Length: 575
Image 1 (spheres, rainbow, N blue to C red):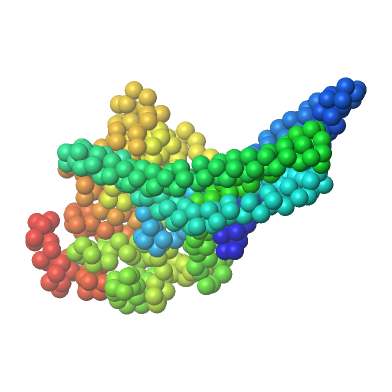
Image 2: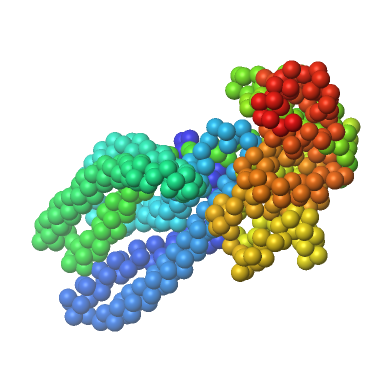
């Protein structure tokens, strides 16, 4: 019951066209009615032929009905297949949109391979069910009911004998269906694991090659592939028994009915035409019954996929996690930021303890402290990737809880330690996420201010250069400068710099620093850095230790009165 409910929900999510679906079913109904009339006419055609009576009328009518069956069946198949494809396409869109709207906490607990598997592999199983097996189930149900009705009319005694034998099939379908469900669900999980491993290896291909880990990744991937294959073979063993058994039942039933039919023909209870007609109707029953078993097995096989998709659709969206109604996208911030008594706990561990920060608009604020002290968490809370356990964060006096995620993040430019790059051109990376028209002059200015123009012009294709997956064609410093140029184009009043020069060489650092200085002019800037050369000229420096603010002031002030800051500076020889 639950699995059929899940399937109905997913079909609804896939925007099933009820009108087209009804047309397809009606065409299939026409096909079935015509298909059931042909054996009935066949008895008169055969008896007329044997008795040397005129039979052309029956022959022409049979040919005409066969053409109608072919045309209606073909159109119905195309309509229903198209519906199934569109349902799954819409479902994939729904899942993709859902994935993009989920909060960071979801990604903290789920790997990307498993999520991608739900969108691709799981929906493929549903497409097969909707496009083919569901349609066959409806057609076969009508066919079986209609064919048995004609069989009862032709010879009710033989039909009762057949009905007694048919339930043997159910004795096989039910226990096998349970096994098929468990194995199929396990296979779907293994597909997700395989996808995760492959994506992880390909996403970090530089690490794989630099670590000489090709053989390890080969073995790791091959193990997952073999696991999927082994489970698929287990499923094939079940089907290897199921299909021959079904064929055996159908063959035995056919032989019994033929034997009884020939006896009743010899006794005069049936004519030759009626016996042929009866056998044709018998095939109209036995074949659909076999396919009905396949449908129920397919339901079991797809059950795991529908459960995994339903679980994903039930996840709470990022915007839905807000208890306070957002005020929309109408605010233009200047960048005055205030953290008031903010506490944050993650995975039952205290990360920030009663943090209060005052960051005036247009000022440069630096946060220093050891790894794990909570510096990056402050950036995450400011952008609403996570939410404080208590306390408030204000921008221009407005609580960020009341600001929509889109509006808030459109005012913030974020440069990470390793700037993410999409697989596309440099131009596509520069304009990524900018929802307005960008002129050539805008781009030229952003490249000049970020000191990116020179290295871009060195590429033969210039700004149209394909950078490769994760920016493989670019150095770390070039990626950072593209990220800085993107913020110039985005024109945000707030800039967050998270270890922007920690992973680059001294020459690149010098160039990046020039771009950073241009970027932070007249912008509210929060800087996280271990290299104090990037923060010692900040308007205000906060020292963060184990989630607590242990000092604040200018570089000179902290050197006088903060022991941790003095030790930190002396250790790294930044003075």
